[in-house]
Length: 530
Image (cartoon, rainbow, N blue to C red; front, side, top):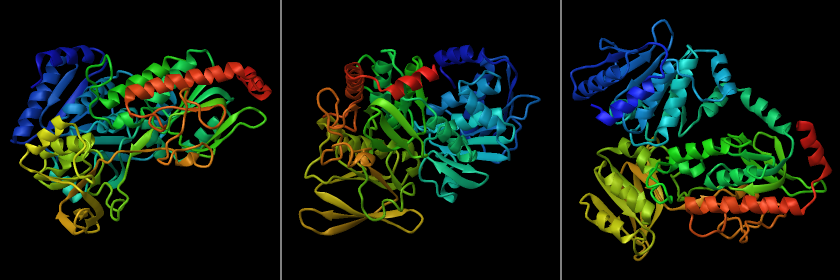
């Protein structure tokens, strides 16, 4: 089943396993079961430590258990973990085989200390770039703690379960039969939900930190670049972010980053974090900033966090990025993840054979419609403007598809549903004024970005669009506070531009530091912390 090159790579990886790996497959006479057995045979040939038993009795078929003889490890895949999930399969084999994880030591200790019995079920799609993070995190948890079990389920293959459990967005995680969470999650986030005292301990640890010289708020491309450029100056640097990688984590394909012909968002995010960790940077992940306090007599800017702790720094670089813009119409919030979606790559396979709408006629919207047209029964693309704004090459491709309808000069006014899921959409003809209803099962919103700056209102000068106003040096209206990336007024929201801005903001912050004297409080705190 696997190509020769991939087999060779797999064999090299599996040489790192130090203990036996037992695979127990549950199959029937379906074509997918035959494909699974072929895959497992390739795995067996790749390592003498792997044995395969095809007499499993799991009701989900095809599926397989990965364990190690004599150990209570329960890691399962229901379906064929190819595509984005092939990496999850390889990591699971390595970790069950005794290869150590790169997870933080304190996180590993938290997982091992969890009490209680946990059965996690994660529904994924093979085209979802966020799903592997969740699958890999829970697989590792199941390897570390014998009271944790995990099964990763291909939602497209087990459609009956998806329908019964009303899953309309991936990744969706169930714990002991009840819905646990949706969307991308790290192991740290999962543990924080299970270990109720973790947040308080984290807040106490953060509150006790000495002041920074440069504190970066945000962990996307702009924030990562700022942290690296600041740390290279040999000054005390910290990063506080909700999730390292930012919106890049939600980007399927990146083909315009100079010198890198093609990559995927999660891969780039991982590379960004790895690069930052090469330097002496204090990374504080899962931290949401809610307040900025301009410097007082002590010369320190304060950043208040959602957990109640406050970080202090002589300079701050705001790199909070942006998020998908919502339509703001009745029914959107009610049916979010119940038919209203924002990631066609992730959730598209769950709508196979169904009717959907794409809102937005820019590049993102047209690309989404093209992708979805190959999966769903019919796509209606709705554009507010009188014409599509996507590149002409994309428009030609879209118009060539027989199961796509394009509606321009249309304003979506309501998302309809039956209380459990979407069943329609209403739009108004902006020319004639008439309202029209479309019967459908899914709505994919692709109407641009909204800067993550609400918490800065009244403190930092913002544009009418909510963007942080900066000059050519990245300086904001607040002394000692700089900004970079998609949250700012810089035109063209691109990764390469955000990185350049991050570097500019960090260098400007350093220039600010050397032109201003360090406050006594910061100097004393740094000396004591050393």
